[in-house]
Length: 125
Ligand code: FES
Image 1 (cartoon, rainbow, N blue to C red):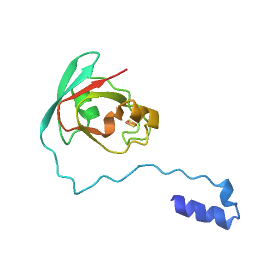
Image 2 (cartoon, rainbow, N blue to C red):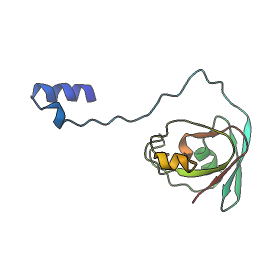
Image 3 (tube, helix red, strand yellow):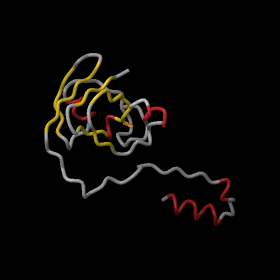
Image 4 (cartoon, protein in one colour):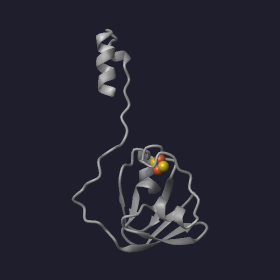
């Protein structure tokens, strides 16, 4: 649809410099990664709430099923509303467009794009 709209604007002789286009979605998930069906414990600070997440499940899904509340929006790694700090543990991450370089350096991850790869501790601060 974006390409068709750009073509139409070109036919109307709108200069390209006056056309802005946004793209969403980040990188495509890899399909050659083996499914991780192990269960991993998650702990949320400061409440200390714990739950279990399967390796195929995001931190956000596991948290919500366990009653941990989260701010959320796009569920695609773009808006950044589910940002949470990784205190400890190994994770696999998807699209991180919703994080700034400073967020990443400070250890933040996006709960909707993060899957555990071991015991994980996260802090909502
Ligand atoms: S809900 Fe938007 S980045 Fe996670």
